[in-house]
Image 1 (cartoon, rainbow, N blue to C red):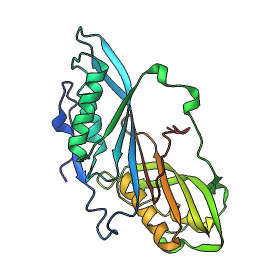
Image 2 (image 1 turned 60 degrees about the horizontal axis):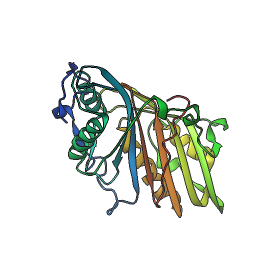
Image 3 (image 1 turned 180 degrees about the horizontal axis):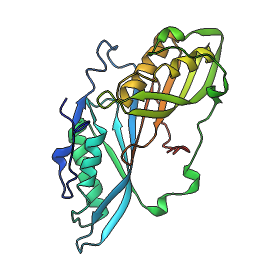
Length: 266
């Protein structure tokens, strides 16, 4: 895997699309049901984008990037950070040009159409800080001993429900650097009631598991789908920032549209 992760790097300040490092999703999806049992997207929020006007005056913005789960590649996060930094001393005619350039480059790297929206100060309001809906599993005082993701922790109880639950206790490790990745997990499902204590134990069992954000969410989706067979299922993760970028993958078995709601740790 040829990425800048775990390697000494310089930060070029002139536009350099060659910095982007696509990673095939095929490896993490080995053995997964085909066609894919979910739809979804990876929502990236980049908070440190800056470039120059034609006269050298700096501009700043945030970028919201949506990479479809159907794309053959995901984009390695450090390479995206380096790529976006390469705009910092590059002159562009206007923000629309910057947005279109990012969209074209990321679409080429992902192998599918990527959505890009730029945000300025006027687009940010306190109301954008939100909370995940449903019951918070973290208040359950359960013993957690699993050292690796274990779908055997998942089980169903009697009755059919439509339920939303969430947890802020998710932690996994980068597969290259072993740096910790912390996230809040939201699960929306319909079908047999899932045992909440077992679900929390399952979420916590990822604490020393090494994989990328997107692959972790897909594993959670597949494990819950396989163990509990819900009629509908959505798994959504809101990860904390690294390098000024937060990544928020969601996968669903139905036509869901997940809001890009910034949480208190983001």
